[in-house]
Length: 314
Image (cartoon, rainbow, N blue to C red; front, top):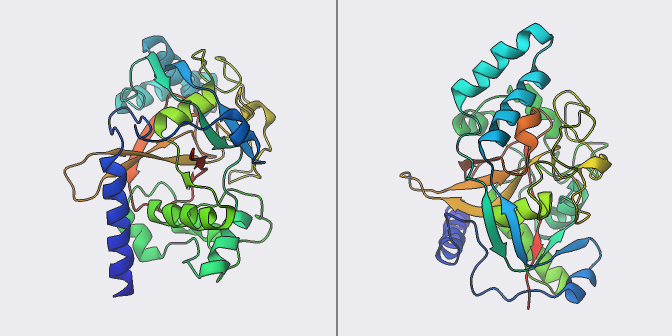
């Protein structure tokens, strides 16, 4: 019964989100009051992103570049690059990105850092919410099994304790419903209101206004972030890669983990998918562009998925 109640609460929350946002553009709710820079910066750990125009999406040139640098990153020898690029192109990894265009957003206030294991532990211990994790059976049922379950095990919590040495790593293995619950609890602690960023907000926060591909510019840097061939091949501490800091001073806006947004994608199945932005520690360069996005079932829990919050205006 408790499980059914939690599920119904989650579905109700999703219906409320769907009713107040544009599923196609990922724009913030039209009724949301715009936050001021003073109000945002009064809260340590948050960055103000001013309202106005920015260049979003990608064009043919950017996508072709993404295929090339992904292949170069993946291939172990120069003679393997062409075959790797052909493989990426066959799968059409970057063809579903929205076209390059100018978008306009109101100002918003976004967390400088991903929510960490330590942050999330306070929530788990305070109200007894389920700890991050997923069983073997749930993982198999979830699908998209890029990683064997043995690679999941190092991220499993023991009771309300996160894995040793990962206090400042981004929390993973949480679902959209878990995030809603965390945001509600944190609001009760801080006296503020929180939500996930929309896909467009996340993109602007990552790339600024000038249409750059990455937080640092439009040329790939092998040392720019935690990706498949530069890092521990696992999550890393927040803020460990200075080049992945965005023009607004927001950390880890390329690499480390994919990030949940509150932009939902309508599907023929009963539950919507959610758009994720960014790239993860086991990805290759083209996926680390601000324009890249992909969707997953809204109840997913994965070792590659984390989140940060936006502070609502009042």
